[in-house]
Image 1 (cartoon, helix red, strand yellow):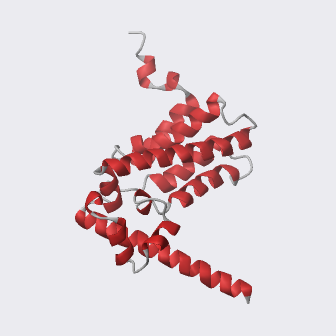
Image 2 (image 1 turned 180 degrees about the vertical axis):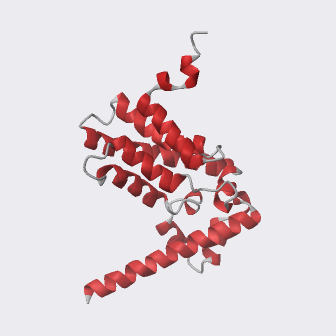
Image 3 (image 1 turned 90 degrees about the horizontal axis):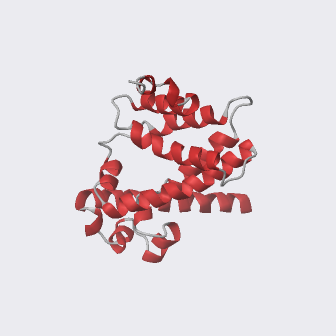
Length: 196
């Protein structure tokens, strides 16, 4: 009986959270992030303001409702990789699968890119992800979380999808960036031309 009640309660929380995120995105894209208050989002989702803040700690967090899921999936890509699969390849494959599908005409992407407060929040969010990813990489490699190689790979992994999105073929560009990391600058045509 308790398991059924817990399951029902969790489903209700998930529905409320999704209703809030959906209402926020709709209102923010219709009227602009700065022109909508959190009270309006709560009313549109038919919940109290205190309920909104139980699910989302800030107005900006309403836009990034999958924040924890994204971080968990990245960490799992490292921790749960197939035996013998290098960490670098597991991370690359995960990012190609999950981060290159973001379309620049997606309403959430447009909203974030056009709103300074949301861009700043996204940067802070990625910084939190960087720490979690560095911890997973440290665990997988036996190095310290603050080791330059671990911290560098975590930062690179989080920045590379943004660079790749500017390409006509983001998945290929991301693979190329990871190949550059793995094989080094000396393998690039630019490096071979440096002696001129």
